[in-house]
Image (cartoon, rainbow, N blue to C red):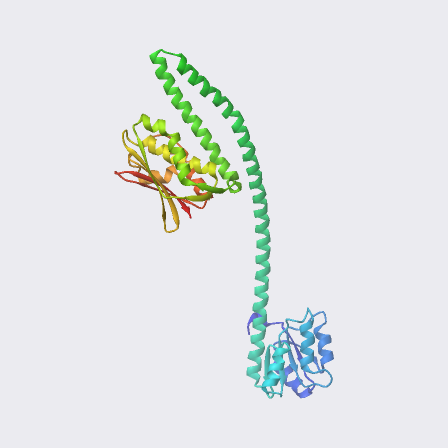
Length: 380
């Protein structure tokens, strides 16, 4: 017999001494308790050590087996004890009634000893498995509580880090931006004041470095702000056509210095729900890069069209080819360990990528010997 069946207690409830003797002799592998009426059976079951299984006769004087079973099921301490009815009543209605009041099984008299033993073992095995399952659930619940407590602690720590990051942003804005603005102003003042060719060349190098640092610090701050506060940004209807034309007008002088022309191929009434400020910043980055890396006398093409319920805003230039492995790097925020393909470290496309993620959009970059196409994809 299975080890877990040892020391199980079975309550035999029957008003016939002969039946009790037979069952008592059959169940010698188990502990046994005897009751000859319903009242005595309930007293034993409701005691300090309830049985593991009850063999219950139906036809007894006074309280019958059905009523005993009903009361067992109403009591918290006995509601899950398996009950096997033993009776000479074998009609379908009797069986249904026994199952309705909460019996697990039904054996008719005279019974086969081997069959009865197997049914007893089956019910005890089911009870054992339920106990194991309950214990496992309790263990899992404790693990979940423990893990939840850990996550709560981690979330509080993250909130603390977010607050620290926001405070750090304020410090950065004041402690870096303010002196940097002074350096930029002084550099441009010196450039306008000094006529010495060697000094002028030196100042041009200084201006380029200062401008790059200025752009980097601004973009780094914007990326950090998007990471910390992006989910709270205000969104409203934004006209992409109008915004694209505005950015092209702002770059008109820079494009003219390289003899670059814009070609706009726009659909009408192209509106998305987005944050207007950062949508414009994204367009400034991709259009600015197109001008920067296009060869002189070439064309920058801006196309807006709807493809399968997605809005595609594409900026095409004729600059040098971007290797696929570099494309993966240039869209990573603060991917500073590697140089970009123009030998400079930048954050512009990382800002665009983060902006699109916050607007459920996608960034797609395709580069070939013919051209490079940067596409911002939005849901219509």
